[in-house]
Image (cartoon, rainbow, N blue to C red):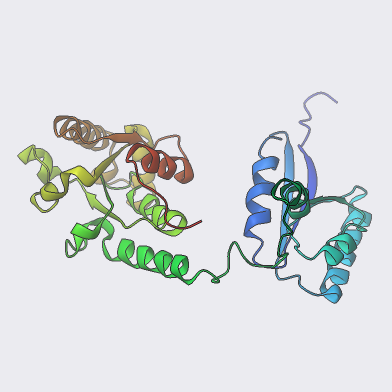
Length: 280
């Protein structure tokens, strides 16, 4: 009928794992992102590590299939071969992310895998675990210029105007890559002086600037402080312009955060700054 707008088709997606489900979610969502016309209802079921728990998951999947009249999608990172095969009996399209890659690797390396659960997101590697904790603690302590103590230990110092994405990017660098990341705000006082804040001048070679389009900055600031001078478009245009000019004069490399995800911003910084990730 004319005037009716068809809703996008909906499919239920299960992410099933014997540990946290992070691996299944990350790879599964990367694949699902290629299907823009569909609406996915996501359900994550972690710590499925016994045959009884597999049976419970099978019931949930089969009930969903019966209720919706179509097979759900299942992304599984179950390591145990027997339980993985058990899950394969579900009334669903089951994509076994672990088995798909392990068998070819075993053939190529002429070695049998350990089939041990939790290796990628556990704390079996204590060095990596503590490196992650140290990075997160450092980044939280050095958020938004809160302190300049031990700033010499920073591997990267993000600078930019308020609300351009410094804090989430720094935290992502710490959490995902183990990078000791600090961040420091550029304020109107810095634009009057037309120079970098004195406390970060000694670390000029560690600086990386974040820029943003004024219109996007206004949206972010308006949500925080509605109808304020801080959030006005004129003020946002001024701060963005002056910050960009300052960073250009000081030869600070920059990345525009306007339309980039945190993951893309962090990876761009990692690559352009020549940093090596410490955790995987």
